[in-house]
Image (tube, rainbow, N blue to C red; front, side):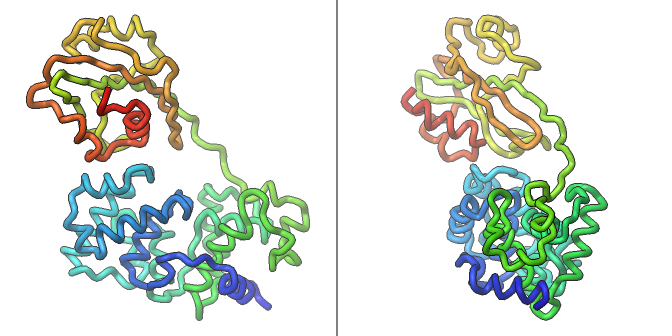
Length: 349
């Protein structure tokens, strides 16, 4: 029995029952695929359910405000995915009359849709014979065929795409692609793969040569950058605070946060409070600024670690710039801020 038949048979007997597998509607498949990029199914599923409830179709998503989209996305990370999702929804709804492209080439032109997502939608929704390659697929193929080419190299990307295309069942590309991804998620797992019950254990070269733990090969990551954030958490006598929206193309674009002062290195309480910039930002005497957390909160992103202190700033009045503290929960904020709000009991502070 060839590779594809074994894989599809395994999939039909072992697949998880997931809501997006009960449909071939491109809107729902697109939504699930965007959400599950760099996200485990267990984490992404509640967000998928929330989005499909709030936005049953692409027109509903297109008509929503970006703030509402970001608020529902809050905690899922990689917020550029949410912004691109919203932009693509508007394009499909208003420029394509709500009809998604029906082939890989046209799908790939949509904002935020790369090779993997276009292949997934094209094969699952339209049964187009295009191979899908994601992290799960890299792992299965590298182990089964003992491929040591780094998966995050140009040569590796081409080699694995070509191999996946050669193995693809062209009569059942939807089942094959979903099966290959599911196999990597459930059977050929990153750690403790189920080799004893694997239907490919008689032909897996990594198992034969005792290299399961060594594959796939990945080039070393980019050096992690350290950043030092100091949030000024204002609290006025009228029970208001200040929030500002992050601009530019950096992290958390479009999300809201407390006024931020970033320093190039860790800073002591005495130095921080005495800095002229702090005095200008707060407009207050040093005695009105109190450090909330002695130990910095470390928030780890893929290429940067953020060391954060929160500074409580008492103020008489914040005028028209102030936001009622009980309304802060309505704004989309980074998880770092959300965790602080919950831990500190901010509204009652």
